[in-house]
Image (cartoon, rainbow, N blue to C red; front, side, top):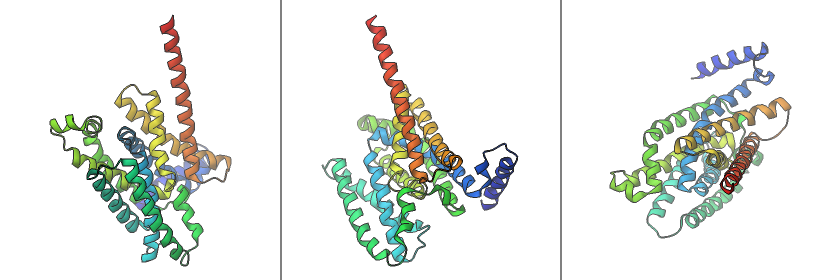
Length: 303
């Protein structure tokens, strides 16, 4: 894949030198960030519709925070602090699956259970980070917390490409059944849908794509990119198809605009923060549109 990335980078750089593309596209790291945006935006946008439907916003936040603990464990075990993927994926997958297993076998509410697991994960991470700071500069962890899409390399893009492909391959054929299982588990079970299996599959999908996105968006903010575009789409959509498509569009545009605008305006802000701010603008704009639309309908009814 490195040769493909290099071909794309050279082509886009030629467009930038010719004045066809923005001037910032002369730099390889900007092109890398745009490629990541077109990978991460559609996947997080699509998964976000299920997160909103299943009311699992707090769960995705817990996974993002658990990734920080996974990074600390990886550094303690000797993994490179720039890409401790084995520890992040390993810890977060076990964390997510065990949390879902516990939820299915207790009468405790989901938010309470997730809060308990999140607290435990953060406590473990805080203890390990105290040891880790003796090995690396603690400031390098800022990229994990708030994201640094402009520092991604070919390895990061390969990981994101593989995870995105797997999520699309597994998620699209099961999407309608997951939606049915979310709205009415009993009806889904009667129709032969494997509700429990799909539940674990979705938990696994959201876990791996969240971890793959942490370095780009940040552990603190990745949950927002899953949730906010879907919430914006909900304001405009009148069907599940519209909900899905709008969410993908808003998430992708948020990533692309959040990368390009700060570079063009030379604004020194974290990439994750810029992406979420753009997503927030979409949310407020769609909220206003929805309010105006409801006001217009009310006025017509009165007349």
